Amino acid sequence: MSEKWVGYNELAWLEPVIAPPEKYTEETERYSALIKKHALIEPRTILHLGSGAGMNDYILKKHFKVTGVDLSEGMLAEARKINPEVEYHPGDMRFIKLNEKFDVVFSPESIGYMTSENDLHKVLQNAYAHLNPGGVFIFTTFLRESFRENNFIYTGAKDDLEVTVFENNYLVKPDNKVYEAILVYLVRQGGELEIYTDRHILGLFEKNEWFKLLQETGFAVFFEEHDDYYTSYIVDEGKYILHTFICTRPLNSG
Image (cartoon, rainbow, N blue to C red):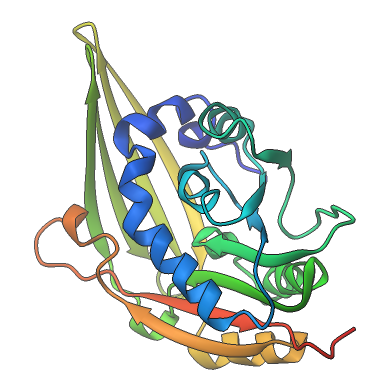
């Protein structure tokens, strides 16, 4: 978690070029509907752990008062430009303490950076501690048993800038508890080409491991499967299977 990925820092300014916030509308509205369906209280405030460049927040702020947390200063700088009314904090989702509780804790995919059960346990406990009774902790991740290796291409252009990003998701063998995501950035501006690379290591846990940890933390757990979030970016005939966990903190939990 201490790595300084170029895509999340020096190249963070490319995020709205590759995927402007409007592209996140369908996905984020789906999350908002799940939150409102499962919350046992009226959800007004949301803590976004791993808020990135603030693309989801651009949609979320129409429904909730948003507070964001991210490790990468580059991403936080972009998020503040896109959502000046949102309060953003630098921090690690395992350890940050905001001395405030929220109706929703939200972490779409960022929780995947937890590569050990110990780190995952810390995030779940921290999410629970920041959540009001009756509130919802919602996140999306892969399951180890259904993970598939895939290749993706993302493109964007603005004025004289053209960006192409290739992503390769690869299962690290023989240890299938983690996978690596290799990203290659081709940035063409003013006729000049620059190439950058990033290597991300992400965790893979089985469905029963997720349920065990979440229930031990104190959550009631609901579960959905999705395979349409990134379909348009997949090369060839791959399949990108994501699983959304909707976890409620009981009303009588103090």
